[in-house]
Image 1 (cartoon, one colour):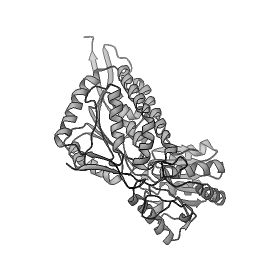
Image 2: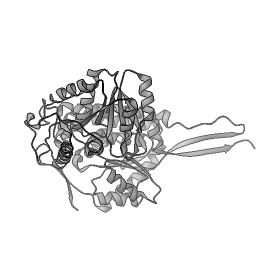
Image 3: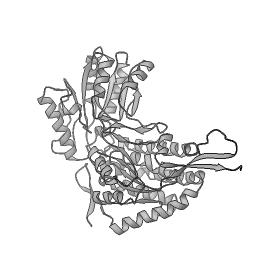
Image 4: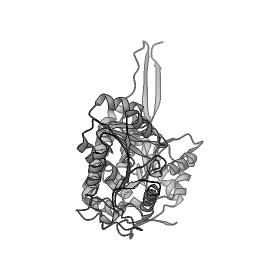
Length: 462
């Protein structure tokens, strides 16, 4: 079999190499998961919680090693590495605490002579296919809830973040999870497709590109298994006339450029009411110029490299096409000494005079670029925000709660934010519409995706 290799965006060196699992090893892993799951499902939720809490604690104990590993694998500056682990802990502990309520039987109104209820049974084996950009956060969204719901889990992590899958395995082993209940596997794309089409798993949770999501749906066709897909995004922000200008600037800049713009729910396009447009752009550009692009292992770096040169080149191409079509660039890449064409190191860019005829305003960039457009009304902002194939999140910056709710009700999106962005609340469903995918993770709704209803209709009086 071939090897899977992680080339570090820091210096393009080989950081990790692992052999791809053989077909027999894969089949054995899924068979072992199915055996382990039967006994696991019989454990009370409180006992599963004890194991999952220990798993969480074991992962956090590895934090000192995990933070530089993240920088080497996907380029996140070490300055921000601890934030991923804080988010991991928040989501894991929240879903553990929620399980008793979310998994409780549904009991209808009493009926004489009958005992009736709906039990939430686990699905069986969940295959989690996790991405590299937030490798712990995206994986924990399904792994911990799947285990709490009584399922077994097989994890296939992205090649770029090979070591993250191994960290999950180490944490599960340290926590003493039953043998086979959780398995990290290094698989090729072809092997993943075969696993799905052979119905070795009962549920597939995938975060990644739209094209890869289509391949997964095709592999699952006719297998009657669940498929949860979080795919692309082109998330908009709308700054209303009554917004707190400085607060909106500070937080939309962070929402656009954190993680070098490589966030599913990062802000990729901004619509600003005409009364605030000029000062907003001026302050936005000024704050953007303050980023420090460089080696992510340097504690002073606030903007690391993109994950691959090809990804940076794609974004550079979008910017070039927009400029040729009439857009205005407000950042000179030469002001960022580390910016080097032909490498993943790319300066942030702010574009104005953009239109929806430009791919930078309609196609996912997944990089450090944002376009800003002037709008005259809420109605115009909603129309432009909805002019997208995607719908993961949308943020509204305003002092008016009622207006935010009304505007949010008209936006085609999975999550509506007011005065914040780029955050997952584990008590709310994480979901999307249109080409962003299907299904949901987190919250009580997420547990519904990891269980199946089983009705009990018991006549005890004859």
